[in-house]
Length: 152
Image 1 (tube, one colour):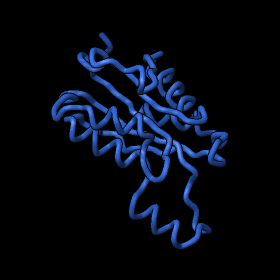
Image 2 (cartoon, one colour; image 1 turned 180 degrees about the vertical axis):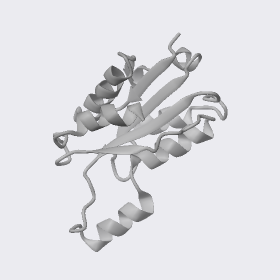
Image 3 (spheres, helix red, strand yellow; image 1 turned 60 degrees about the horizontal axis):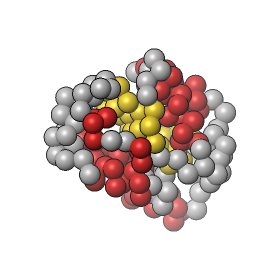
């Protein structure tokens, strides 16, 4: 039975890198792709991190399916945190895109909401880790930032 777990989905490998960095920083905590998570993996958990790339302002379909499958209260007593990878917003973006980001947010927002609904406690603010372009790579320093973030 696992006490700590990092669950992620990744399209181009960037979110996988962040998940691995978090797992290492948590003392070599198991890291599983969302499609490989079994119900038994969640039974004795105390700490859970869930991450996804942001795709069309939301987590991947596999991540959403996993989150929707969590029963209310399934994560009661679990300390959890949400993260995503994203192209960072900047003030030079067109006004329409800035509005869309304000309205719909990033994947971390939806992950956080689902984790709360499942009963998890989320003392750590969700985090977004930047990629240079749609396929990456990660912005320099983001893996170190991920390790530092989980320590909070």
